[in-house]
Length: 214
Image (spheres, rainbow, N blue to C red):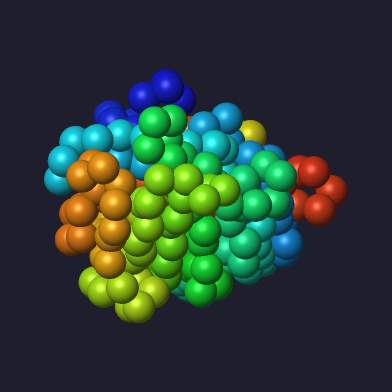
């Protein structure tokens, strides 16, 4: 089932038990600081042009709230990097590096399926700049939500209590701004999707976090 998280499982989990962002409460165990290893790959797709770029894996660092009766945001991301601690390189012929900034990004839960142990939600507050690595061919711009400096980009996630795996699934609201170069593959105003396969969000002892509702 995990290989289908970008489609039917995410939809099924959200449909099985939908919790309103303003009314649901959540339990996170143990909570506190978390770190992840980098996902094997991440993928950036310009959904306006249909062009997809394979990128390096993404590693995230942050904190969860701890306990029960929690309200959103249930956590925050304070760093998003590649495995080596730098920008995330994307593409082959046309290359660019993604730099995440304007932290923290917030983790907001939306639904929980007690049968599958899957929580779905949104990561909000995303702002990314991209630029060519090592002075390569020009390909620069900004990825954000409603504007180039709005710092309100969003992406959907699915969190699996089994193994503490977080999957970035589809974009909620990501668009490109101030694009130059890129061989016409990306334009200002294009809609963007950013996906990452999986990474466990473990506490400092190496144990996965569990998210349930209530």
